[in-house]
Length: 235
Picture (cartoon, rainbow, N blue to C red):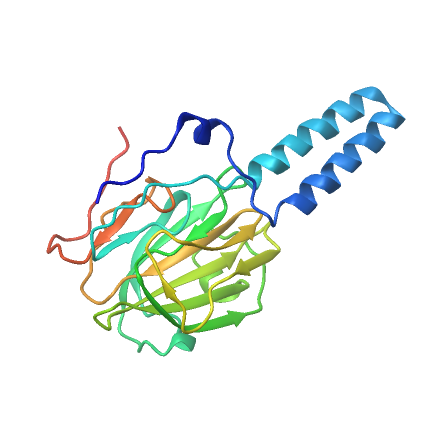
């Protein structure tokens, strides 16, 4: 089935996520009050309001539809590809598996998307710290929401929303027992954060540290392929 072509207008006039409208309104009110105090401050407040709207943008994406492709759940840069056990609270055992970590800066789209089709079988929220999400210890120490999804063939995939240095709010709309499609929106994180994906045992990463990913589009892994983890070089 051929994907629907996005219109040019969809690239220019990007919707704002409903979670962002209260913040945009607060920024706009602040800009108005600052402008009443002193004109130049109003212009600065207006610029901040535009940035807030930009932060909460929610563009459509074209998601590959072939089965067994694991797609990036977040916009951002791959900050690590390693092999570690999945979060113990998800009951997936302690066997190390490939983990791909995608770090989102405050300039990235922060809408999170389902990496592969399946059923949500477990959600586990963990309160924690707010250290820099790019650091490896953030996966263990930071506030996070861990999600286990079982594919149709029974293979489990885990993905974890991790709050960062600036982030103070994890929003997850997924629910246990819910069937999800690859690329479907399931939540967001305010402001700057990270999402980790734990692939099934034996699966390799098709992205390398430093590579930029697009949520809902960039292929992190092909579960039908037999190639090893990919490496990359800065050119």
